[in-house]
Image (cartoon, rainbow, N blue to C red):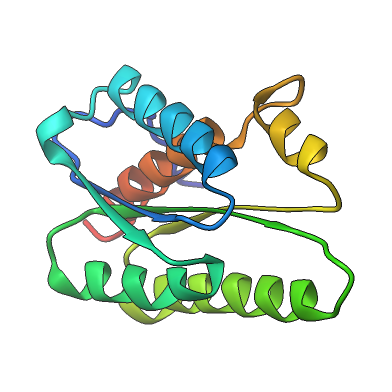
Length: 155
């Protein structure tokens, strides 16, 4: 059996980041975690592209444009949706997750899902550099790993 596993090495990779301005205090910490981890993995700062969008609902369209541009090897989507008093949370979360997944499937460019979907601001803060780690760093690493794996699988 031939096993495919790759070293998580970002050297030479071009990584796009699409980040939501909504809940920006949390997203800024996710972004810091993502960029720090990408540089640790060997991605050159000049090979990082950042696009800001209004909210999590807009992440899929911007990430699709970035993927279709051919300018990136993987994309990291970052956002934060905190449950409120209406069903709006459910719609935004579902569409963001579905749309982000669809971009990867449709374009073949790995797109990682770094959208926190929490009940409270405190839960979000805990996952954006707090007691639960930094999910921005986690999804950045996943994007690098998938970019390397896809290169391995298509040769």
